[in-house]
Length: 441
Image 1 (cartoon, rainbow, N blue to C red):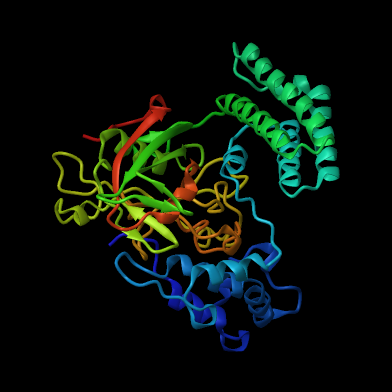
Image 2 (image 1 turned 90 degrees about the vertical axis):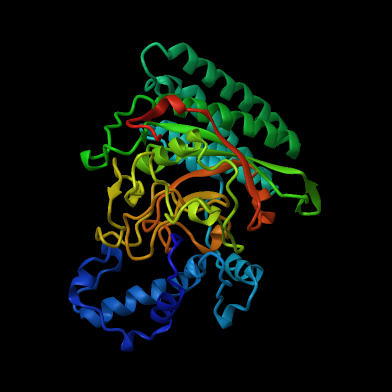
């Protein structure tokens, strides 16, 4: 069955070996990123030792995300116990800072953003973080920085918008400036709740401005070998409703008859994966389908054979007896196009950061067979595990599985989703016009 790979046993075994017992071919060392490569005179043994000392713990922990197939018990190593909470507590003590905000990650995934735009975004996001932690002095500094950028770099911030959109861009910038003025006064008065609301307003308008700038990016179609698969130019928003027959969902003691989620699907970094998903949602493929895996790490669905609809594990177009397969599609941060059919490791860039990392609770990932990278079809998953355990560039998901978006509303509701729950309806609420190429029938 298609699922995130069951790599726990092998990965943990390698991670827990001592360097003296690990023998790697020279070709493998040449594939390490420069920061992990051998120092002069260290030789192969030194390179291997440096590499595994830095990555052994993260490999072992990250493998937890991949350790169980649908219908099987999760397999936690003995030294972590049997509870995801224990693993979360262990990870939270690591001291690493991970960007878990799906809205921030979506902004960072947009192309064509200039230095001034990123500076404004950084100041607003940092002020939000400091306000959340009641660090008002530091928040004040970042709010001042944001105000300075909006005033001194106004022309630069709106310079990259499409022709004819200058008025709209100026409107967004005015909204940002007004929200920052309110934010400045509220932060100075230590009015946390109202300050966070103003900060959110500023960031929402900034997102709209950045999205407007991103539309000027030249996004060529994927390679011709994938021309029979629909692809997404830009982004789309999907609304999804879950229900439970004869029972309610219990999320932190609050009961829900239905769970409503909003997901933003990204075609800038995963056009084929996102296009395939949006196409199937628009077709109604997922309507009425059950959740087929829920183990505390992922919530997964999309296998028609689990619904009694034939023997195929993926989507089969009308009139065909073959599943529509899509390639592994991953993108290194800073690259202008995705890598197809290869993991970061295969491409010689293992450990590099992904443009769209598996950092946020509710990140969307495409499931595939373990040893065949181009085997995805219709099965996908929400990642639930705390991202402290899987920082970008240091886990077994980034660069090995396609992340094609995030859950932007209702992500935490996924905590009580169980196998057998039903997708009442999934629909494309915006961005359907961005779907390119052949459509599902």
